[in-house]
Length: 461
Ligand code: MCA
Ligand code: AMP
Image (cartoon, rainbow, N blue to C red; front, side, top):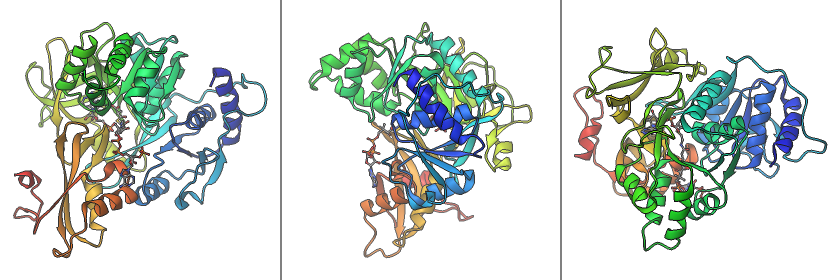
């Protein structure tokens, strides 16, 4: 799709959206999603990107919470009944008429551009309100760090309903006037093909880099072509979760290229990153990006200065969200009085400012395949299954997914417990397929302390 065609398609759609409260976008990895989001941005109407694989319970929550009036989808998309009450507009990526498009008034920088749903430790996901200035600030800080220009051709296969794939992966190239090639779905062959035919940058989550590292193994078919393609790229960038040092080293050994890491969060967009002209250091996520203030803080609020000390990362800057939709309580809890956002990530800082993330404050948050998943939402879904009496959810290390979701289940009837597939399908249908347990362990009872609280740490023991 050319810029002219995107302008024409988004102008005609934007004209139909003006005055809508919020619009939901059925965010398939297609040009329709790009046109829908750009049209909403141009109309100044906040867009709520929906994961098309979201299950019934989670989708009902997001729709009730964000109250969109319209849903934008591709003409052939079959939408679930919970969206029946919304006006549906099918996105036309090639409307009749010339491009260019009338200039639409620029909404204020503080006005909300996107509402992106993100999991917490308990309860259903919260909608992070992302204003236009945060998106602009974060993308411009990446331009500075990565010397990102209109000549860049970004290759990726990230979902378009999260910050990584949508803001960095689509709005990033658009802000620079560059190009994006979305693979539709991730494959190592697709990455090799696009990087060897003009792609200059690759964005991915660590699971994707792990699969690339596996495919670079000398004996794997296509390994030599893949190595050449990766070696020829200007930048290989990993984010959304920690890139294991082992995968980093395997890729470096096979390609002579080092993957650079950046650290972000739905609520803060991008916080730190290794610069294009900087030193990629395995296990670190680089230094704070332009415009981002970052500090490490102890439990009692003391700000740490010692390079080896571990503290919670707090950030402040124009990259921050404005709050959680309908959740002033959660917004207040996430921010200090003077505007620092508490990330919940624990880190140390090297003397030159490079940040090393060493863990997370909350054990009830799981990062699997780069998706953040709350243990509580899965436990609630499992407890809804008639075969489940009690349930606890934890994350375990996984070489491919980073962490895999493990469900600890006390069956209602020990003689015929629900199968692993039954429970996985149930969670996939209620929440999302990426939230399904990959392992189920059956117990007679869950370990609890004197107050009745489940002792998750003793589960693994
Ligand atoms: C499997 N599937 C099912 C079931 N089991 N569907 C229904 N019921 C089931 N029981 C389907 C899945 O939907 C999927 O469909 C397919 O089977 C394979 O599923 P899965 O094994 O989970 O997928 P995968 O191939 O292993 O995916 C790995 C992945 C993916 C491609 C790396 O995890 C991914 O795209 N991760 C990116 C996450 C991300 O972008 N996070 C950014 C958020 P189908 O075959 O149709 O696909 S963090 C962020 O934004 C911050 C700001 C940051 O810092 O970046
Ligand atoms: P999300 O809420 O889905 O946007 O996920 C944000 C979280 O992903 C952060 O709080 C970190 O825990 C994690 N994360 C993102 N990028 C990185 C990275 N490069 N290294 C380690 N963790 C990361």
